Structures are given as C-alpha cells and as structure tokens.
Length: 625
Figure 1: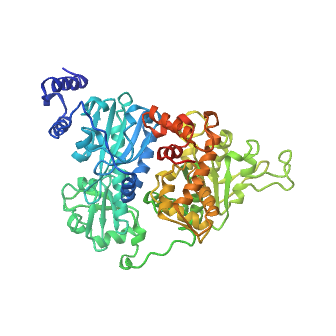
Figure 2: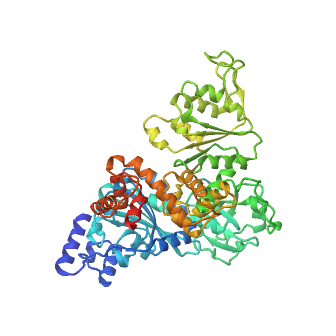
C-alpha cells in the first residue's frame, strides 16, 4: 500500500506523463482543487507571481476589516507563542484571499518560500493554485495542504493549515493560516488554528451584538466559558437575532434562526430567565425537546432593568476613556477587560513591546478601579538587587547599614488603597519572586526588620520579556506567573493597530492643542515600522511640532523630519558599512545592489546593511536623506 508521499509522487508522475489526474491517489479536496486549477488553464510549470495590490488598496482593506483584523491579530500572537519550534508563519487574509497581516519567525522570513508571501498579495486558488488560504476560501472549511499537494511545485516545501472565519450572518469574513516548512509540521497545529478561528468568530459575534442580550449555554457547566459554548443574541422582547455555530449544534435543529422567539426554542419563560439572570450568574435552561443546559447572561448588568433598557448608559468616569486610545476593536476589548478586572481587584499582567503603552494601560486600570489611593509605578529593572525587597516592603529603623532614621514604609504601603505597577516584572530577581509570591497569598507585607502589616493593593505588572522562555531557563517562577496573570492581556505593536490616525491626533493634541496633521502626513507616518512604538511616535511628533511654523503639519514637513532622523540613524547603525548621514547616489547604488542580491527582499536588505527599512524605501523611491 502506497504511503501518502508515494501517492502524491505517483499523481504528479501521471499528470506529467499522461496529462491525466488519477482521483484515487489524492484526497478528495486536493483532487477537486487540482481539477479546478487545470480547468482554469493553470500550468504547473509556469506559476504566476501572486497578484500584488497597491499599498493604498491594502490600507483601505485593512481599515475596512479593522474589527476582525484586530481580533485576528490578537489570536495570531497567541498562536505564534503556542506553536513550538521555528520556521512558522501565521497569516490572516480577507474572504477573497488578500493577505492583510503576517507574523513570522525570522527563520521563516529568510527562506525563499517567504519571498512572495507578504501583505498585499492575493492568494486565491484561481491565481495561486491549490494553497491553504485560497482553497479554504473556496471550500469555506478548514484544509491542510501539505508539501507537493500544492498545485505549483514552487510551494512544495510548505505545509499550509488554513481555517475559515465566519461573520455572525454566516458570510465568510476571513481566513487564518499557519504555514511552515514541511519538516516543522506539527500534528496539533490544525487544532490550534481551528480554535483560534472559532475564538475570532465568537469575538465578532460579541462585538456585533454588544448592544443586545448575550446568552451563553452548554450541556455541561464546566464548558460554559469555553469555545464549545453556544451563543445566542436576543433583543429585549425575546426575539432571536443570531446564533453562533456551537449554538446550532447544541440545539439540534431547533428553530433558533433570526426572527424566531426565545419561547420557540426553550421551555423557560423569557422574562423569568432575564429576571433570574439579574441575581444568579448561572441558571438552568430546558429546550423544547427536553435537553438540559447551564446558561448565563454574559452582559446581565447592562440589562439589569429590562424595562429601562432604552435609557442611555452612564458615562465612564471622568478621565478613564480619554487616557488610552482604543478605537482599534481589539484594543477596546483589552481596555474593557482591564477596567472590569481592576474593579474586581484582580492581578493584571500586561505584555507588549517597549513603548506600546503598558504603563498608560496600567494607569487606566487604576482610574477605572475608582481607588482613592495613589498610583505607584516601580521599574523592577532599575532597582538594585540588594535593596529591592526593602524598597518594595519597607524596613524598620536600624534594619541594615545605611537604613534611614525611622525606617521606610515601602512602595507596597505607599500604594495601600491604590495601585502598584510593577514594570519589567521579568527582571525581578528570583529570590524576591518568592517573597512576592508570599505577599500574594495573604496581601501582607513584612518590612525588613519590622512586623507584618495588611495592605489593600491593586497589583498590575508588565513585561516586554518572554516569560515562558524565562520560566524554561529558571529565571522566572511559573507559580508566580499564575498569580500575576489572573487577567493577562497583550498590547500589539503600533504597526499592527488599526487606530494609528487616532493615536497620532491624540498625541499631537497633547503636545500642542492647536496643532493637527493632514491625512497625507498621517499616511506617510503610517508607512514606517515604529520599532519604538508609541514612544517613538511621540518623539517624532514633538520634533514635527517644532519644525512646522504653522498649525497644520503636512507631508512635506514629515519627509523633512524623517530624512533628518534617518540620517542620524544611518550614522549610528551603519558607520562600519561605508554609509554616511546623507544618501548620495553611490550609496543609493550600494543599497540597490544589496536589494537585488537579497531577491528584492526589503527586510533582508535592511538587516544586511544595518539600516531601517524606511531607508531602503527611500532609496527605491530615489529620494535623498
């Protein structure tokens, strides 16, 4: 009996020699896809390059898909952490196969396979043959395309695992894909991709129906808050607005379609169910055929008074909503979760690159909590190892050499009744981690040389380090991580946020309330990588505010400031490479030569020369720094 590899080899041989395709040698999905490719006139020996849309079209589509894109990026980051090994790429495309976002390991980015896989390329089956994104979009269901199952041999080194994402109305909304070289194929990746797609679908469902009553239910209570739970959106009168795919499975064909009523599906009276939901987190439901469910109204607070549902929602506490820009739906979800967790005094862990706004989000948590005490920020990386315990927990007079008269209360006591923000928690010494763990057991501090005392502290931590890697290397305690991340959120880098324009205007108005930027200036800024994220953007905007004599910053001003900044970065990063501050023609030729040698790969060219990608872009446009 032929192995799968032998079968695909035999299929290729038969196709090449006889021009025929034997169905018995391929899975049904791959066979049907190849037949579609052949009927379209695609030639396996002459693969076309993927269609590439303009940057303007890509940006427009990214903005149009901002809601699902924000949810997808959050799941892509999680997937990238879950999939072990290297040579992986996580991709998100719209329903037409237009690639919108990619997260990949550097080992994958440097391969020849990755050269044509970039945002803006269209991976429909009609243009790129059998491939994960395109074939999943055609089939509207998940698929694995492994190695030589790709219609074009140029992609035979890849394994692509793709899953469709559906909007609440049942229409295809996007495709999630995990691709790797064939040697890195993992058996569990398909399940992880499917789970991520479902998570995105449920996120879309909740966002679409955030103004309606949302009911989660399952046969087993322990699965009520999992991906297998059914979700129903219902209006105030008990009319069903939508049901997710899990709800349709759990209800076994009962009439849960839009327009039907709650009473058409369940024996429980709708008004009684809502009334009980005000007081009980969980309650029992029985459908019309007698199946039993555990259910909860996810947004019961919003509908605690069903008769007054049309009343405007009370405004957020003053200063809370304006301290953190959250026009990006994924960020809005994070901000909402953090606010709720802060009110409940749950320890919060914020992850994200340097400059993504972790401290600002922590300040938002403090404001949302309504706590009367102080917000006390602590940079764990800046505290001396020998003094960090004394700084945090305080010390009694004479506790050690150099202790000041009267001792010190310590930062935990200073934050009593307020919020303690531990930044760079990943750099905390292992010895102190044990002390912090004890504190989290009873919220009691033990000053050095003193007696213990109880404190009431909202604890928010942040890190840009990979704590999972630190745990594996013995530099961070796993049991401490589990106590710090009762709620764990990740702030995406600035380059992946859909609310870039809102962030720019928020920052420039804080710098100078009378100043603004043209759309062209914002678009030009949006093209940059922003490795320093919001912090770097704030610095550039500060320079722009000084360079622009008027009150409106235009694209010309942006180009002028960027050229000057680019020159400074070149001097610092590429001094050994023969490049000076100004990019003369001979130096531009040097960039173009490297660009050609790297197969027109901008990222590889930038790494080779030790300069930013923006410098390469300017060289390709023919501009001078």
